[in-house]
Image 1: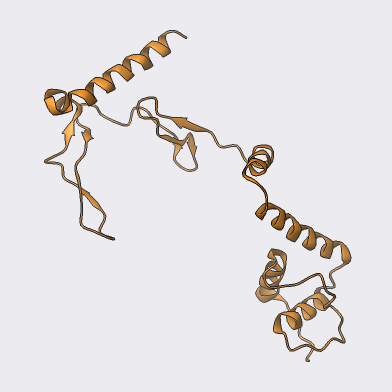
Image 2: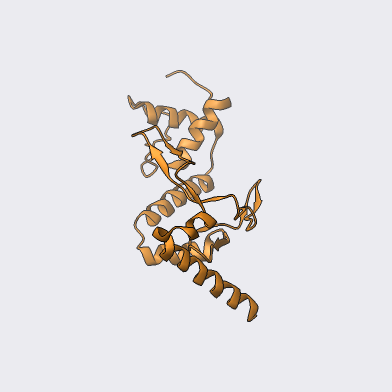
Amino acid sequence: MSNIKLSGAFGVLFGLLIGMGLGVVIVDDITDSSAVTNDPVKSYYNEYMRATALNDSLRTKIIRIRVDEWLRKNETRDEKRVRVLSEGTPVRFVVCPLCGLNRVLDKRGKGRVRWDAVDLDTALILQVRCGGGRGSGFYLDESRSLTLGEMSESPEYDAIVEEIRRQAQSILHALSSE
């Protein structure tokens, strides 16, 4: 086999593949330079190890990463929850007090969630959207959609308008009691 130096983008890519554990078995000693093999993965791995002269501590780190990945695949839901709560990155969400939907409080590049973005006089609160099937999307039919004022005038939506009114009063009561 010719003495190939793995450098540049290919060397970096192959190093990442090794670090991710894709198709490389580290348990057996395949770094012996006298080993002749027909397996291209082992051949490239041997050349990579010789070219970069990786030491034992790096091999140990690679093995540790593979073991950590295996452990994460086999952990229970409760173990995963404990690990993520202790190691994970906290992200704050805000829940809409009217509907219960939640969003990320601070979006990168967009700033914080705004509560004044809807003009209650003109916004179509009840939206009728029409879909044309797979892949065509949904299109707003403004002629059949209603503003909050139009909804409150229609007896068909009395129950929904009353729920919104009650929840808005509960929100105001909770904010004023603080």
